[in-house]
Amino acid sequence: MRIRLHGTPTETAAILTALAHVLTIQHISRPYPDRPPSAWHRIYIDAVPRDREEARQ
Image: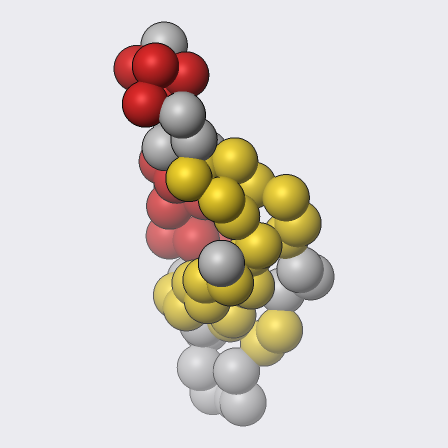
């Protein structure tokens, strides 16, 4: 699946860390900045669900 994260660099980094506990991240795109004056950017990830046993560890 492809997921778009949209927020500040700090927010997207925190969400990437959290998602890595329940998804297998296969690819992370470069950050795409929003138009100024926005401080947000977009990151796209390709991921698949982890096995339930693997996610609990």
